[in-house]
Length: 462
Image (cartoon, rainbow, N blue to C red):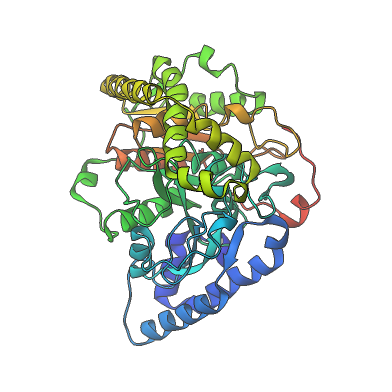
Protein backbone atom coordinates (compact mmCIF):
# COMPACT_ATOMS: atom_id res chain seq x y z
CA UNK A 1 0.00 0.00 0.00
CA UNK A 2 1.31 3.44 -0.94
CA UNK A 3 1.76 5.68 2.08
CA UNK A 4 0.22 9.16 2.14
CA UNK A 5 2.75 11.91 1.43
CA UNK A 6 2.95 13.05 5.06
CA UNK A 7 3.78 9.52 6.27
CA UNK A 8 6.55 8.81 3.78
CA UNK A 9 10.16 8.83 4.92
CA UNK A 10 12.15 11.73 3.50
CA UNK A 11 14.26 9.37 1.41
CA UNK A 12 11.13 7.86 -0.16
CA UNK A 13 9.53 11.28 -0.71
CA UNK A 14 12.68 12.57 -2.42
CA UNK A 15 12.69 9.55 -4.75
CA UNK A 16 8.99 9.96 -5.51
CA UNK A 17 9.55 13.58 -6.51
CA UNK A 18 12.59 12.75 -8.64
CA UNK A 19 10.70 9.95 -10.41
CA UNK A 20 7.71 12.18 -11.14
CA UNK A 21 5.30 10.08 -9.07
CA UNK A 22 4.37 13.23 -7.17
CA UNK A 23 5.30 16.87 -7.58
CA UNK A 24 7.11 19.12 -5.17
CA UNK A 25 4.12 21.45 -5.32
CA UNK A 26 1.85 18.56 -4.35
CA UNK A 27 4.08 17.65 -1.40
CA UNK A 28 4.32 21.28 -0.31
CA UNK A 29 0.55 21.77 -0.42
CA UNK A 30 0.01 18.58 1.58
CA UNK A 31 2.16 19.87 4.42
CA UNK A 32 0.75 23.41 4.28
CA UNK A 33 -2.78 22.01 4.42
CA UNK A 34 -1.90 19.88 7.45
CA UNK A 35 -0.26 22.85 9.15
CA UNK A 36 -3.42 24.87 8.61
CA UNK A 37 -5.62 22.06 9.94
CA UNK A 38 -3.66 20.89 12.98
CA UNK A 39 -1.07 23.44 14.06
CA UNK A 40 -3.60 25.71 15.72
CA UNK A 41 -3.71 23.08 18.47
CA UNK A 42 -0.15 21.80 18.36
CA UNK A 43 1.80 25.08 18.04
CA UNK A 44 4.74 23.44 16.32
CA UNK A 45 5.43 26.41 14.03
CA UNK A 46 6.73 29.82 15.03
CA UNK A 47 6.25 31.09 11.46
CA UNK A 48 5.08 29.61 8.16
CA UNK A 49 6.52 30.74 4.82
CA UNK A 50 3.66 29.53 2.63
CA UNK A 51 4.20 31.74 -0.42
CA UNK A 52 7.99 31.41 -0.62
CA UNK A 53 7.64 27.64 -0.11
CA UNK A 54 5.13 27.41 -2.97
CA UNK A 55 7.42 29.44 -5.23
CA UNK A 56 10.40 27.23 -4.40
CA UNK A 57 8.33 24.10 -5.08
CA UNK A 58 7.27 25.45 -8.46
CA UNK A 59 10.92 26.13 -9.34
CA UNK A 60 11.83 22.61 -8.28
CA UNK A 61 9.15 21.10 -10.52
CA UNK A 62 10.17 23.25 -13.48
CA UNK A 63 13.78 22.19 -13.02
CA UNK A 64 12.81 18.51 -13.04
CA UNK A 65 10.80 19.07 -16.19
CA UNK A 66 14.01 20.35 -17.78
CA UNK A 67 15.89 17.28 -16.58
CA UNK A 68 17.73 19.17 -13.82
CA UNK A 69 18.08 18.00 -10.21
CA UNK A 70 19.26 20.32 -7.46
CA UNK A 71 20.40 17.53 -5.17
CA UNK A 72 19.42 14.67 -2.89
CA UNK A 73 16.59 16.67 -1.26
CA UNK A 74 15.19 18.11 -4.49
CA UNK A 75 11.72 19.52 -3.78
CA UNK A 76 11.40 18.06 -0.26
CA UNK A 77 9.60 20.35 2.25
CA UNK A 78 11.42 20.73 5.59
CA UNK A 79 11.40 23.19 8.50
CA UNK A 80 14.03 24.44 10.96
CA UNK A 81 14.16 25.46 14.60
CA UNK A 82 13.57 29.17 15.18
CA UNK A 83 17.24 29.82 16.10
CA UNK A 84 18.55 28.96 12.61
CA UNK A 85 19.50 32.08 10.62
CA UNK A 86 17.45 32.59 7.45
CA UNK A 87 18.64 35.18 4.95
CA UNK A 88 16.32 38.20 4.90
CA UNK A 89 14.60 37.43 8.23
CA UNK A 90 15.46 38.21 11.86
CA UNK A 91 16.68 35.22 13.84
CA UNK A 92 14.22 35.25 16.74
CA UNK A 93 15.37 32.20 18.72
CA UNK A 94 11.96 32.07 20.36
CA UNK A 95 12.33 35.55 21.87
CA UNK A 96 10.22 38.66 21.45
CA UNK A 97 13.26 40.87 22.16
CA UNK A 98 14.62 40.07 18.70
CA UNK A 99 11.48 41.01 16.78
CA UNK A 100 12.98 44.28 15.56
CA UNK A 101 16.49 42.95 14.96
CA UNK A 102 17.92 43.38 11.47
CA UNK A 103 17.43 40.43 9.12
CA UNK A 104 20.17 37.85 8.73
CA UNK A 105 22.44 38.45 5.77
CA UNK A 106 23.00 34.76 5.11
CA UNK A 107 21.43 31.40 5.85
CA UNK A 108 23.06 29.38 8.61
CA UNK A 109 25.58 26.97 7.08
CA UNK A 110 23.45 23.91 7.84
CA UNK A 111 20.39 25.44 6.19
CA UNK A 112 22.39 26.70 3.21
CA UNK A 113 23.59 23.15 2.58
CA UNK A 114 20.07 21.74 2.85
CA UNK A 115 18.75 24.33 0.39
CA UNK A 116 21.64 23.68 -1.98
CA UNK A 117 20.58 20.01 -1.94
CA UNK A 118 17.09 21.10 -3.03
CA UNK A 119 15.18 21.26 0.26
CA UNK A 120 12.22 23.67 0.48
CA UNK A 121 11.75 25.66 3.68
CA UNK A 122 8.21 25.61 5.07
CA UNK A 123 8.94 27.80 8.11
CA UNK A 124 10.51 28.00 11.55
CA UNK A 125 9.61 25.87 14.55
CA UNK A 126 8.70 26.71 18.12
CA UNK A 127 11.25 26.39 20.91
CA UNK A 128 12.01 27.40 24.47
CA UNK A 129 13.35 30.96 24.45
CA UNK A 130 17.05 30.90 23.48
CA UNK A 131 16.89 27.08 23.77
CA UNK A 132 16.96 27.35 27.57
CA UNK A 133 14.52 24.57 28.45
CA UNK A 134 13.46 20.97 27.87
CA UNK A 135 9.67 21.36 27.54
CA UNK A 136 9.00 24.12 24.93
CA UNK A 137 6.97 26.08 27.48
CA UNK A 138 9.47 28.87 28.23
CA UNK A 139 8.11 30.82 25.31
CA UNK A 140 6.21 34.02 24.64
CA UNK A 141 4.00 32.02 22.29
CA UNK A 142 1.59 29.31 23.38
CA UNK A 143 3.28 26.12 24.62
CA UNK A 144 3.86 23.39 22.07
CA UNK A 145 1.65 20.32 22.63
CA UNK A 146 2.52 16.67 22.31
CA UNK A 147 0.70 15.20 19.28
CA UNK A 148 0.06 11.92 21.13
CA UNK A 149 -1.86 13.71 23.90
CA UNK A 150 -2.49 17.44 24.16
CA UNK A 151 -2.27 17.32 27.97
CA UNK A 152 1.41 16.26 27.69
CA UNK A 153 4.51 18.33 26.96
CA UNK A 154 6.37 17.87 23.70
CA UNK A 155 9.82 18.08 25.26
CA UNK A 156 12.29 20.73 24.28
CA UNK A 157 13.89 22.92 23.47
CA UNK A 158 13.40 21.54 19.95
CA UNK A 159 9.77 20.71 20.71
CA UNK A 160 8.35 22.27 17.58
CA UNK A 161 10.87 20.36 15.46
CA UNK A 162 9.80 17.03 16.99
CA UNK A 163 6.07 17.73 16.76
CA UNK A 164 6.29 18.78 13.11
CA UNK A 165 7.79 15.42 12.17
CA UNK A 166 5.58 13.33 14.46
CA UNK A 167 2.37 15.00 13.28
CA UNK A 168 3.29 15.01 9.59
CA UNK A 169 3.66 18.79 9.31
CA UNK A 170 7.07 18.57 7.59
CA UNK A 171 9.04 15.79 5.96
CA UNK A 172 12.03 16.40 8.24
CA UNK A 173 13.25 19.13 10.56
CA UNK A 174 16.41 20.56 12.09
CA UNK A 175 16.90 20.95 15.84
CA UNK A 176 19.68 21.91 18.20
CA UNK A 177 20.92 20.02 21.24
CA UNK A 178 22.92 21.28 24.23
CA UNK A 179 21.87 18.87 26.98
CA UNK A 180 19.25 16.81 25.17
CA UNK A 181 17.16 19.29 23.21
CA UNK A 182 16.95 17.07 20.14
CA UNK A 183 16.70 13.73 21.91
CA UNK A 184 14.22 14.57 24.71
CA UNK A 185 11.47 15.80 22.34
CA UNK A 186 12.29 13.00 19.89
CA UNK A 187 11.68 10.52 22.70
CA UNK A 188 8.48 12.20 23.90
CA UNK A 189 7.05 12.47 20.37
CA UNK A 190 8.16 9.09 19.04
CA UNK A 191 10.55 10.09 16.25
CA UNK A 192 14.25 9.79 15.38
CA UNK A 193 16.50 12.53 16.74
CA UNK A 194 20.26 12.52 16.05
CA UNK A 195 22.94 14.54 17.84
CA UNK A 196 26.20 14.11 15.94
CA UNK A 197 29.73 14.40 17.28
CA UNK A 198 30.42 17.96 18.46
CA UNK A 199 31.47 20.14 15.52
CA UNK A 200 30.56 17.67 12.77
CA UNK A 201 27.82 20.03 11.55
CA UNK A 202 28.84 23.71 11.68
CA UNK A 203 26.97 25.93 14.15
CA UNK A 204 27.64 29.03 12.04
CA UNK A 205 24.48 31.14 11.91
CA UNK A 206 22.74 29.34 14.79
CA UNK A 207 22.03 31.28 17.99
CA UNK A 208 24.00 29.66 20.81
CA UNK A 209 22.89 28.61 24.24
CA UNK A 210 26.26 27.21 25.33
CA UNK A 211 28.86 27.45 22.59
CA UNK A 212 31.05 24.59 23.85
CA UNK A 213 28.08 22.22 24.18
CA UNK A 214 25.74 23.15 21.31
CA UNK A 215 25.09 20.69 18.48
CA UNK A 216 22.79 20.84 15.47
CA UNK A 217 21.18 17.75 14.00
CA UNK A 218 18.28 16.17 12.08
CA UNK A 219 14.88 15.09 13.42
CA UNK A 220 13.20 12.60 11.11
CA UNK A 221 10.90 9.63 10.61
CA UNK A 222 13.63 7.04 9.95
CA UNK A 223 17.32 6.54 10.60
CA UNK A 224 17.95 6.60 6.85
CA UNK A 225 16.38 10.07 6.75
CA UNK A 226 18.62 11.18 9.60
CA UNK A 227 21.67 9.86 7.74
CA UNK A 228 20.64 11.77 4.61
CA UNK A 229 20.18 15.11 6.36
CA UNK A 230 23.31 14.58 8.47
CA UNK A 231 25.41 13.95 5.37
CA UNK A 232 24.07 17.04 3.64
CA UNK A 233 24.51 19.33 6.66
CA UNK A 234 27.94 17.89 7.45
CA UNK A 235 29.65 18.59 4.14
CA UNK A 236 27.01 19.48 1.58
CA UNK A 237 26.77 16.04 0.02
CA UNK A 238 24.90 12.81 0.51
CA UNK A 239 27.58 10.53 -0.86
CA UNK A 240 28.86 7.84 1.52
CA UNK A 241 32.37 8.66 2.73
CA UNK A 242 35.25 6.19 2.94
CA UNK A 243 34.74 5.48 6.66
CA UNK A 244 31.25 4.09 6.07
CA UNK A 245 32.48 1.27 3.85
CA UNK A 246 33.53 -0.60 6.98
CA UNK A 247 30.26 0.00 8.88
CA UNK A 248 27.83 -2.91 8.86
CA UNK A 249 24.06 -2.50 8.98
CA UNK A 250 23.48 -5.53 11.20
CA UNK A 251 23.87 -6.32 14.89
CA UNK A 252 25.77 -9.61 14.72
CA UNK A 253 28.62 -9.52 17.21
CA UNK A 254 28.20 -5.84 18.08
CA UNK A 255 29.40 -5.12 21.63
CA UNK A 256 26.61 -3.22 23.40
CA UNK A 257 27.19 -1.45 26.70
CA UNK A 258 24.18 -1.43 29.03
CA UNK A 259 23.54 0.20 32.39
CA UNK A 260 23.48 -1.69 35.67
CA UNK A 261 20.04 -2.16 37.18
CA UNK A 262 20.80 0.42 39.89
CA UNK A 263 21.19 3.16 37.26
CA UNK A 264 17.65 2.53 35.97
CA UNK A 265 15.81 2.87 39.26
CA UNK A 266 14.60 6.40 38.52
CA UNK A 267 12.88 5.26 35.31
CA UNK A 268 9.10 5.08 35.26
CA UNK A 269 7.61 1.58 34.85
CA UNK A 270 6.70 2.06 31.14
CA UNK A 271 10.21 3.27 30.27
CA UNK A 272 11.94 0.56 32.31
CA UNK A 273 9.76 -2.15 30.80
CA UNK A 274 10.34 -0.93 27.23
CA UNK A 275 14.11 -0.67 27.77
CA UNK A 276 14.34 -4.13 29.33
CA UNK A 277 12.29 -5.64 26.50
CA UNK A 278 14.55 -4.00 23.91
CA UNK A 279 17.69 -5.36 25.56
CA UNK A 280 16.12 -8.81 25.82
CA UNK A 281 15.18 -8.71 22.12
CA UNK A 282 18.73 -7.96 20.95
CA UNK A 283 20.50 -10.21 23.46
CA UNK A 284 20.75 -13.22 21.09
CA UNK A 285 22.31 -11.01 18.38
CA UNK A 286 24.90 -8.97 20.29
CA UNK A 287 27.41 -9.13 23.11
CA UNK A 288 26.05 -7.32 26.17
CA UNK A 289 28.49 -5.76 28.62
CA UNK A 290 27.60 -3.76 31.72
CA UNK A 291 29.30 -0.36 31.84
CA UNK A 292 30.42 1.79 34.74
CA UNK A 293 27.79 4.49 35.32
CA UNK A 294 30.17 6.82 37.19
CA UNK A 295 30.99 8.79 34.05
CA UNK A 296 27.29 9.56 33.58
CA UNK A 297 26.89 10.71 37.17
CA UNK A 298 29.76 13.21 36.98
CA UNK A 299 28.56 14.60 33.66
CA UNK A 300 25.24 15.98 34.83
CA UNK A 301 26.24 18.57 37.46
CA UNK A 302 29.31 19.71 35.53
CA UNK A 303 27.31 20.08 32.31
CA UNK A 304 24.79 22.24 34.15
CA UNK A 305 27.53 24.59 35.34
CA UNK A 306 29.06 24.97 31.86
CA UNK A 307 25.68 25.55 30.23
CA UNK A 308 24.63 28.15 32.78
CA UNK A 309 27.92 30.07 32.74
CA UNK A 310 28.16 30.26 28.96
CA UNK A 311 24.48 31.18 28.51
CA UNK A 312 24.75 33.97 31.10
CA UNK A 313 27.88 35.28 29.40
CA UNK A 314 26.21 35.35 25.97
CA UNK A 315 23.13 37.17 27.32
CA UNK A 316 24.87 39.35 29.91
CA UNK A 317 24.35 42.68 28.16
CA UNK A 318 20.63 42.07 27.63
CA UNK A 319 20.29 40.98 31.27
CA UNK A 320 21.64 44.40 32.22
CA UNK A 321 19.79 46.55 29.71
CA UNK A 322 16.44 44.86 29.05
CA UNK A 323 15.94 42.02 31.55
CA UNK A 324 12.14 42.13 31.51
CA UNK A 325 12.01 41.24 27.83
CA UNK A 326 13.19 37.72 28.73
CA UNK A 327 10.64 35.08 29.62
CA UNK A 328 10.37 35.19 33.42
CA UNK A 329 11.65 31.65 33.95
CA UNK A 330 14.63 32.15 31.66
CA UNK A 331 15.48 35.52 33.21
CA UNK A 332 15.65 34.05 36.70
CA UNK A 333 17.93 31.20 35.62
CA UNK A 334 20.26 33.51 33.67
CA UNK A 335 20.58 35.91 36.59
CA UNK A 336 21.50 33.08 38.92
CA UNK A 337 24.02 31.77 36.40
CA UNK A 338 25.64 35.18 36.07
CA UNK A 339 26.66 34.90 39.74
CA UNK A 340 28.63 31.68 39.25
CA UNK A 341 32.32 32.13 40.15
CA UNK A 342 34.91 31.54 37.43
CA UNK A 343 36.36 28.73 39.54
CA UNK A 344 33.13 26.74 39.18
CA UNK A 345 33.29 26.99 35.39
CA UNK A 346 36.98 26.03 35.32
CA UNK A 347 36.41 23.07 37.61
CA UNK A 348 33.48 21.90 35.49
CA UNK A 349 35.67 22.00 32.39
CA UNK A 350 38.30 19.92 34.22
CA UNK A 351 35.59 17.38 35.01
CA UNK A 352 34.71 17.41 31.32
CA UNK A 353 38.16 16.15 30.43
CA UNK A 354 37.75 13.31 32.91
CA UNK A 355 34.33 12.48 31.46
CA UNK A 356 35.75 12.29 27.94
CA UNK A 357 38.54 10.02 29.18
CA UNK A 358 35.94 7.88 30.95
CA UNK A 359 33.90 7.44 27.79
CA UNK A 360 37.06 6.67 25.81
CA UNK A 361 37.76 3.81 28.24
CA UNK A 362 34.17 2.56 27.91
CA UNK A 363 34.42 2.49 24.12
CA UNK A 364 37.57 0.41 24.26
CA UNK A 365 35.34 -2.43 25.48
CA UNK A 366 32.06 -1.73 23.62
CA UNK A 367 31.05 -0.43 20.20
CA UNK A 368 27.90 1.40 21.31
CA UNK A 369 25.98 2.12 24.49
CA UNK A 370 22.22 1.65 24.90
CA UNK A 371 20.34 3.74 27.50
CA UNK A 372 16.78 5.04 27.84
CA UNK A 373 16.54 8.50 26.29
CA UNK A 374 14.38 9.89 29.10
CA UNK A 375 13.44 8.42 32.49
CA UNK A 376 9.75 9.13 31.84
CA UNK A 377 7.32 9.22 28.95
CA UNK A 378 5.94 12.65 28.04
CA UNK A 379 5.08 14.52 31.24
CA UNK A 380 1.67 15.99 31.94
CA UNK A 381 1.63 19.72 31.39
CA UNK A 382 0.38 20.55 34.89
CA UNK A 383 2.73 18.09 36.63
CA UNK A 384 6.16 19.54 37.49
CA UNK A 385 7.50 16.24 38.85
CA UNK A 386 10.13 14.70 36.64
CA UNK A 387 11.24 17.87 34.87
CA UNK A 388 14.47 18.08 36.85
CA UNK A 389 15.56 14.67 35.53
CA UNK A 390 14.59 15.03 31.87
CA UNK A 391 18.25 15.31 30.82
CA UNK A 392 19.46 12.53 33.11
CA UNK A 393 20.46 10.20 30.26
CA UNK A 394 21.05 12.84 27.57
CA UNK A 395 23.40 15.35 29.23
CA UNK A 396 26.44 13.04 29.46
CA UNK A 397 26.67 12.46 25.71
CA UNK A 398 26.42 16.19 24.94
CA UNK A 399 28.99 16.97 27.63
CA UNK A 400 31.44 14.52 26.09
CA UNK A 401 30.55 15.67 22.55
CA UNK A 402 29.93 12.13 21.32
CA UNK A 403 27.22 11.00 18.87
CA UNK A 404 23.86 9.83 20.21
CA UNK A 405 20.56 9.04 18.52
CA UNK A 406 17.13 8.64 20.09
CA UNK A 407 15.06 5.93 18.43
CA UNK A 408 11.31 5.34 18.94
CA UNK A 409 10.72 1.91 20.42
CA UNK A 410 7.70 0.27 18.83
CA UNK A 411 4.67 1.49 20.78
CA UNK A 412 2.55 -0.71 22.92
CA UNK A 413 -1.17 -0.34 22.26
CA UNK A 414 -2.44 2.80 23.96
CA UNK A 415 0.96 3.81 25.30
CA UNK A 416 3.06 6.91 24.94
CA UNK A 417 6.33 6.87 22.95
CA UNK A 418 9.53 5.65 24.61
CA UNK A 419 12.95 6.53 23.24
CA UNK A 420 16.03 4.31 23.16
CA UNK A 421 19.39 6.06 22.88
CA UNK A 422 22.28 4.53 20.96
CA UNK A 423 25.55 6.36 21.63
CA UNK A 424 29.02 5.80 20.21
CA UNK A 425 32.58 7.10 20.49
CA UNK A 426 33.66 10.47 19.13
CA UNK A 427 33.40 10.51 15.32
CA UNK A 428 31.58 7.17 15.43
CA UNK A 429 28.51 8.81 13.90
CA UNK A 430 28.17 6.35 11.05
CA UNK A 431 28.40 3.38 13.42
CA UNK A 432 25.61 4.84 15.59
CA UNK A 433 23.44 5.39 12.52
CA UNK A 434 24.18 1.90 11.20
CA UNK A 435 23.11 0.32 14.50
CA UNK A 436 19.95 2.42 14.35
CA UNK A 437 19.18 1.12 10.87
CA UNK A 438 19.74 -2.45 12.07
CA UNK A 439 17.27 -1.93 14.93
CA UNK A 440 14.73 -0.64 12.40
CA UNK A 441 15.34 -3.64 10.17
CA UNK A 442 14.46 -6.12 12.94
CA UNK A 443 11.31 -4.13 13.79
CA UNK A 444 12.40 -2.98 17.24
CA UNK A 445 12.03 0.73 16.46
CA UNK A 446 9.49 2.51 14.28
CA UNK A 447 8.02 6.00 13.95
CA UNK A 448 4.22 6.01 13.90
CA UNK A 449 1.78 8.80 13.09
CA UNK A 450 -0.53 9.70 15.98
CA UNK A 451 -4.25 10.06 15.38
CA UNK A 452 -4.43 13.84 15.76
CA UNK A 453 -8.21 13.90 15.95
CA UNK A 454 -8.16 11.50 18.90
CA UNK A 455 -5.19 13.05 20.71
CA UNK A 456 -6.82 16.47 20.57
CA UNK A 457 -9.20 15.48 23.35
CA UNK A 458 -7.43 12.45 24.85
CA UNK A 459 -6.16 12.26 28.40
CA UNK A 460 -3.49 9.59 28.61
CA UNK A 461 -1.77 7.51 31.23
CA UNK A 462 1.72 6.15 31.44
